Image (cartoon, rainbow, N blue to C red; front, side, top):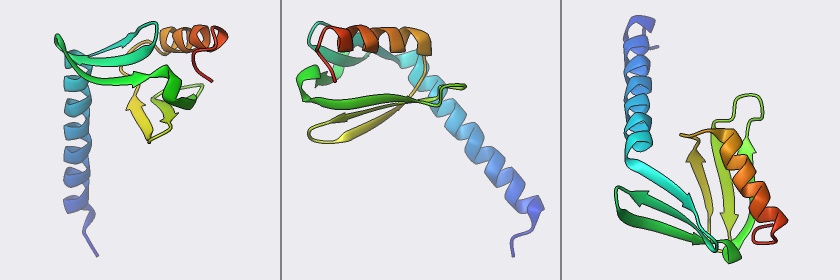
Length: 103
């Protein structure tokens, strides 16, 4: 068995690296809900576009502590960490849903 003295620093280091990764993403990524697409930018460069017409469903996990944004397209599913205000995200998604742009 692995001694706890070895496991704890490894686990702590892995969690710290994941935290640094999320911090970098929060600083460098920008999400934009346009009239027809959900766009992801790094700086000024568009790195991914998700047309609303290809969305099948969406959900924000967990209501009490929202940490994950899920949406499914025709081609694939996507999980994004919530690196922004979850209430703003939910209001944007509900507005798009009311307009009939996403399911």
